[in-house]
Amino acid sequence: PDETGQIEILLAAGELMAAAPDRFSFTLLNMAARGKPARFIESGGSIAESLSRFQVQAAVATPFILGNATASVLYVDSVDPAIPQDTVEGDIDFIIGLSQLASIALANLSRADLERRFAEARSSMFEGTVRALASAIDAKDPYTRGHSDRVALLSSQLARALGHPESTIE
Image (cartoon, rainbow, N blue to C red; front, side):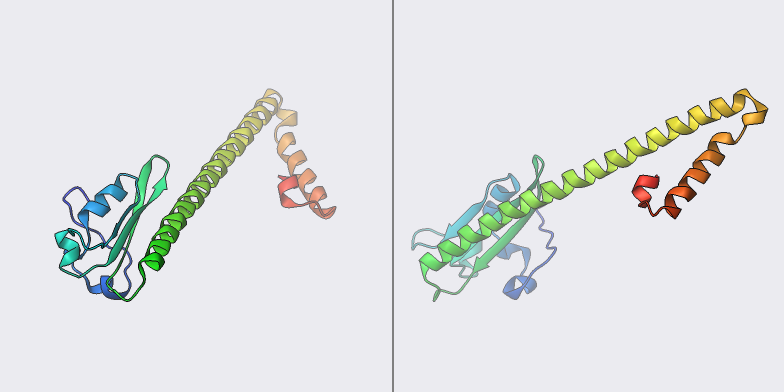
């Protein structure tokens, strides 16, 4: 749920696709939004009003954690009383485990993207430094002006002719 308590559904399947926001358990969603998986399995005792209206037998809300924040929450429920309780419990454990693995994968992708951006920045900074040094050398004497650029061009053409990969030529 957002700051106003409204749920933004990004993807839904089955009965949840057409469900109104009151179909979801805000208690479970709020727990998951705080970073803790939350589950509900009907056991004949008291049941949350939001879940009893739709005869929900089991529900789980599990977070996708990115860094120190919850990036998203996966909410799954079941209204089929024919499914055995041990199967439902196993499915809930599987969903929670899957979301934890997805969180790790998201963190790894985020870290890889950050490392790639840092590498690009380092490369750009290094290239700028080399260009500044070459310009300083070229500016010292009109006779040598452009010499560094010509050497770089000829060196890269020679490396290509010898079959070196572009990463090495760079």
